[in-house]
Length: 260
Image 1 (cartoon, helix red, strand yellow):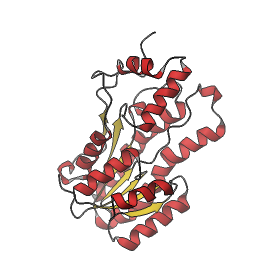
Image 2 (tube, rainbow, N blue to C red; image 1 turned 60 degrees about the vertical axis):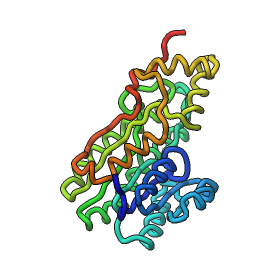
Image 3 (cartoon, rainbow, N blue to C red; image 1 turned 90 degrees about the vertical axis):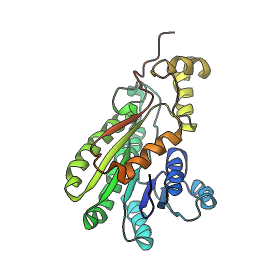
Image 4 (cartoon, rainbow, N blue to C red; image 1 turned 135 degrees about the horizontal axis):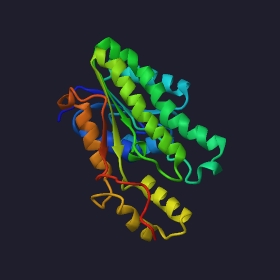
């Protein structure tokens, strides 16, 4: 795979999966613009990826997105890849205990943020008659996830967004796909496991062993594996892959852990 000559915007690009994707894209020759809500995380990336344009932006805010694209446009005249990776995990609690503010926060970042970014990117894609959008969904977007209703709902919505954008933008040569990571070995995934263990009155280590039995391959996924899939979807090797939701999860069977 080769991304030399391509420009990419990656949201949530200063940490976690977004940073892993940024590193992979950079290794493959892409020019990068990384958007993140955390200025501290962006500051840490400055020396790691010195050539990248770094923009602080909350994708749930249209004004922030407009500013991010203004900064991008000052440096580049084309956009080849948009990676909608920014997201929040939301609360871990029963659905009838979720506050309105918690619901609105997850919806604002996880789905409205992707809409804002895709809308802002569309003029570039239509002018070029080319481009690729990669939306980060989750295995929580193809099955229910107890105690994680807002997150699961948004990740289902990402798949609908992906399929519809693929239909609307396909006529101008733009491909739109989503990636569905499984249980990712990283700070967020491990924190969610700890929260779910607490909700079930179990120790995190014991809960994790039972949780892994929900996965056919009985293992977590590394962030670099998600980055490799994103790189493929961004590359010309995936030139006719569009409207797809692709799992990188070791075959997640169910979110309900085995009985204790």
